[in-house]
Image 1: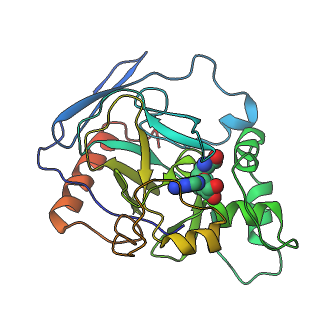
Image 2: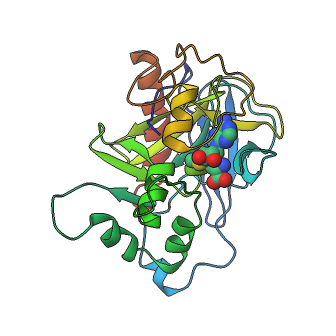
Image 3: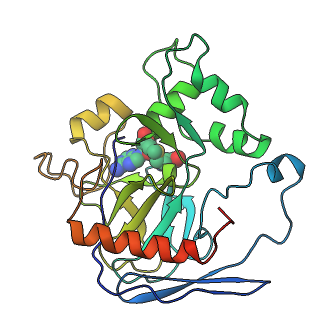
Length: 260
Ligand SMILES: C[S@@+](CC[C@H](N)C(=O)[O-])C[C@H]1O[C@@H](n2cnc3c(N)ncnc32)[C@H](O)[C@@H]1O
């Protein structure tokens, strides 16, 4: 999978308010939407607490989006309720980042083996497809779920984002934000309650089959290739959009300085 792009936004974000028991964050593109992010009732046990960086911040999983079964595409990501266009759906750090170092030790094994038990289980639970029987499961997972990040110098595999399915007419876009080390996803159109969140993996239908081993079931394929990369990679929908996204992300994160 290749990756990224920016949102349509104009309004400055409103100020987030912090309360000890509840993080109440407003991410506004246009119009504003309120995300109530409640910390987990039971904190993760010891090995997890060694990892201070939350994968999703703010955590929209369970408040704005959810992962569940699709009819024909395995798992997918869905809107939990109606979401106006131009909202940040997900702002997620990779669970595994693969940077080829040239070292003899496979950097992927090093990265996977250094994960906490629950993050390792999340990684290993991801969908994987391989045409090469000598390929390790971890490699197949990276090739089936990885987004190109850091100006194509690395690949990131994500706990939630790697559950987002492809559509030739996607309703969402994404962009890697190096400054915060996260991939940001936002919806281009209003999403209805229960609507699946989709992005463009950046390949024509026949290459989706060749590279990822699936026949696209999105129902909107034209195979013209015109849409290809429209929501992926490091492309942008315009400097103005990108600046707005930066403002939104940084203002909400600055309020929480130190927690990422
Ligand atoms: C990155 S994963 C997406 C999440 C995956 N559905 C799961 O269950 O974890 C990519 C895989 O999802 C499935 N998939 C994604 N988009 C699809 C589509 N438009 N049509 C059919 N299958 C799709 C394919 O099996 C593909 O290899």
